[in-house]
Amino acid sequence: MHPWLASPPGQYLLAWEQAHINAAVANIFGFHALQLGLPELNALAANRMPHRWLATEHLSPQSALVTYFAALPFAANSLDMVVLPHTLELTVDPHATLREVHRVLVPEGRVVVSGFNPASLWGFRQRRGHLYQRLGFGSLFLPQAGDFIGYLRLRDWLRLLSFEIEVAQFGCYRPALSNALLLQRFGWMDILGQRWWPILGAVYCVVAVKRVCGMTLLSPGWKSPGILANAPVSVANKAVVTHVDIQRRT
Image (cartoon, rainbow, N blue to C red; front, top):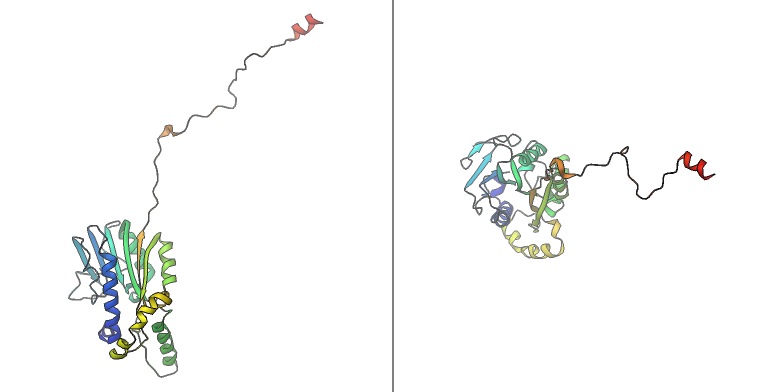
């Protein structure tokens, strides 16, 4: 994926993601933030947490640590924010990675996820490229590595882990073109796309918060003692008639 980012559509994508991720993480507060993968994008640049790290699965000059994303070297409930720029698409086990992110996040912590949208012009060209490759000709527009995860699919995964989506944004509505001049010529589609077909952008950015159900501890005396079924009950003003009284009256 990395060489593709240097192409005109790759630069167009990075510019959109950098702007929207900066806006998403700027007002998320805490102490510890982590970015998993994609060192070409500085996803934590606009965040103000004192401890920010970039983790990659392969050695990179920008990375602070190299780790397997499905087994992060952090304690449970220790991170305030985790950013996943195309991480779920490129990792071997996206389900395990997302579960690990849920483990290390504190309650009410945030996860920021970006990825390609299969339901877009770029996704349509990618599927057509796969078909042409099976027939023995053609090439792919987007990087071949990874499995693109649609927004609805990602939303279901997040809900299963008790994440609540706060913000979901789509962008990059221009056609799947590799020429920089043609991409600039279709710049008007970004404005119309936000208005008329917002969920058909080539890329999405999702912010979700980790919800944890709380509980209220009750003391042993929270409930009044019940009345025993066989306990004697006094009845006032009730006459007692015996067998002797009945004989005297007759």
